[in-house]
Length: 443
Image (cartoon, rainbow, N blue to C red):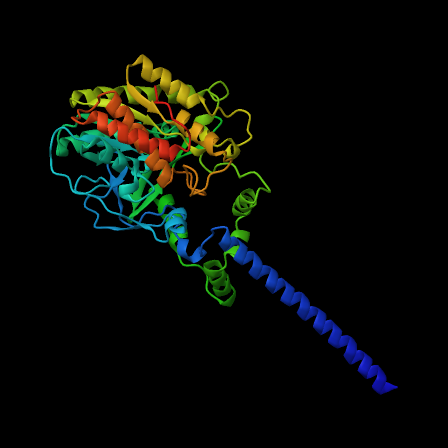
């Protein structure tokens, strides 16, 4: 009898062990299938994309500047820019360097008659140099384009960069400024960034959006915050295990990030994408946030002075208005009712027309492209912005460069002996890129 109970007990224990093993095996198989599914969706090894939290540029790429707060270091010998979206798409990061002028470009000998590019990170590129819209412009119009966009710059800083570059490089015939709606806030917080120990850091932030109150961090506060970002993580088996999983498991890496989970669901059609992580202050209603009206007046005055300084250098100013992703894709917009997505473009357009400043607004063409391909969210293969980062991708850079090149030639902003042939080539390329029957010229 005792033996029978023992056998029943052993049998019951065996079933429990077997069931537990089945559950564990099922979990492991489920996890492996999820991991495989994520990789099939295009998510790469998370360990390939590890980057500092405060920017992905290599140390010492930026240098402190007494006027602008920060600038690209002169004659930076070269390194790579760790943009996860780019690595995921092309399998490797892209190289970055700088010339003796502090511009992300190849060496430049002083000369007159070149085209100067100024702007922020959308002008800097977020792609390999030869893939940026500045490089496309140079290729299509056949004139040397000096590419001097700097991440984090606003119009005020671009005015200062203009003086510094022209003083060393010679007189340009055309100055193209890549403009984004966020330039308003960059001007309001000028100079909002600095460089400490080779790292670009934030010095001024908008502390109270309601009142427009700015907070200026002290040097001690900046160093404390920088140290907290750079210091080593705690050691130990548990932390080592987390680091191992973070490096090798896409599923674990996604589960740690709620926004990433929502992006995954959006790609499967199960949810809408999360709102853009970009600061939306420049889309706020002026009526509801009175401080913005003065910020707008100061910002437009900076643009007016930029035109005067460009003309004083014997050149023509052309502003390329590059839309932010939230302006092109409604699904990325915050549901806050007081945000006005079209207002920045409307206001600067009225200003440009009144002050007779040449401009090209890419928003109509970008929006039309999105409607043509019928996409509700951005991805790196079909659309114009990186799937996770908010900047224009390689295709977006190419499309922007072609549209800009056509306008530069059509308006005779530079002289070209083979203008007709170049325009014909550009039109064919735009038609191939756009996936639409035709894309009308900007007005």
